[in-house]
Image (cartoon, rainbow, N blue to C red; front, side):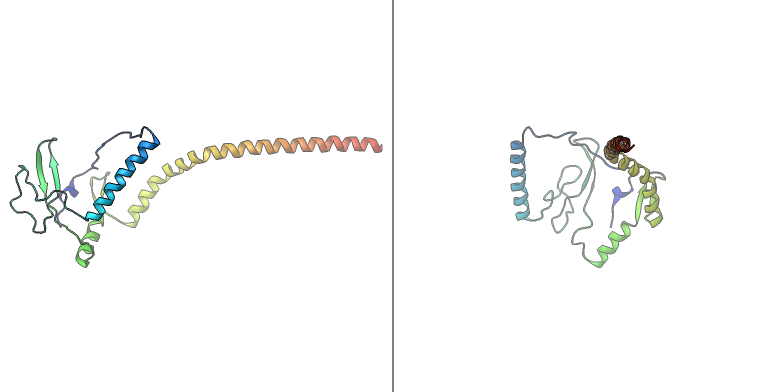
Length: 183
């Protein structure tokens, strides 16, 4: 099981589009209808390799393609035109055998640490520490979300207190007038 890109530090990110909007609801529904047709067609055809035949860095056909025809893989480019490296797929399906499950589990035992710039074992304490680091942000978001609710509750309490004060005054005034009748 080779996974060369695993040892490249930092996250990979590619922005395709910043903001996508539809001109109308009709255009949106038409677009998704076309997408649904394409996906239905793909599902009916079943799984296929990404590129049939396989290509070398030079753009020539691979000298030693995979026997099963699955020659897609990972291509690294220096720019849009020039491929610098090609990594053949080496961990092909199915993934339900004991051997492959073991390899997957071994691989998932480590995670990249941005602080130490190295792989660290995934442990319960690491997960707890990450949760502790994220807890203040989560609490801040919850407080932010609850702020309108808190404001509504405060204004309701103010209204309730005003109503109670008005009722007390009415009782006091009514009580004073009824006492004056008896004296």
